[in-house]
Image (cartoon, rainbow, N blue to C red):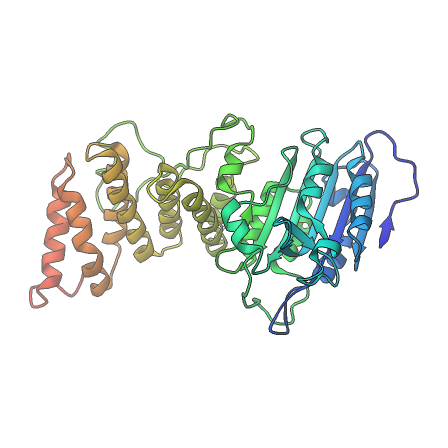
Length: 422
């Protein structure tokens, strides 16, 4: 254990940072997560930067602790602080086989000693529960073992405390590390990099969203907060208990607007609002800056959460598919954009009917992106579904359907003039 700024009597408003390294996650003798390296790297960041506050603060780092009561004591002291609090946990999640509860494995914890050598996860929530809302942040970089992962899948989250903002990732068991031998994990490393970019300290949700998008997380990773949990946070653009609706492209109130010529791109995705719980402004900013890979990666992560929490046919899921479609268009990836726009149009058609403005807008996006394709095989691959979609819509300008049909027919007959030049 090592401390920074400790030894002073806690005054009103004094902040606290508690950083804890648990047991390493190892698979086939390969280290998947090295908590000690994560904690050491995080300890190099000034406490004021970690907290996002200029108040005096104490920093306590626990590395190698084997007694859960030692960790509980430090957690209790941290929770008693009157100012802002950041708790960071990195390590392995496991399950107490007798009690069936999640536990944070400490150094040396084995399957047979969990009950005595690991910190019950519910202890964390119990200690933080009494703190005022808005003063507590919990950041986790964890790996769930084979006993803990099914429980997390059942929860579809990692509950901590209603008074705390929780950010982080929980990787599934049995994944191969992105880089064997890498010391600091991707999520923690990118979290630190975002804090150091300066000059202004970004909001936690922005740091988290950018870290997630850049970290090359293993497939299936549980990202916290989930989309539903974000939606339940109070903010200027939504009320508690009502998840925000995922927005697709900005649309004119006039139904004629989506039927624009195929030479004109559809209106770009609108990412309204800058509330602290909305990742879309950050995704849009990345795309505008030309960081298309990061933007697409972040959008995929959030779409996956919406699919898990709201369902594949939900308006939220369709909205995220539309966001991904327009991000692909902005990146010049017209095959992906065409596929995503067609899928969104089909989903909206099934849900809303042929007269809905959103269906026409999705069809317009698909038609534009399909018109940009120059690969004959791709045009033929996507053309039939696009034409089928256009045929069921009451198009104000029938020329769009007619031109799409003619292009598709020409490419199906290679000997026709112009057929090789879509």
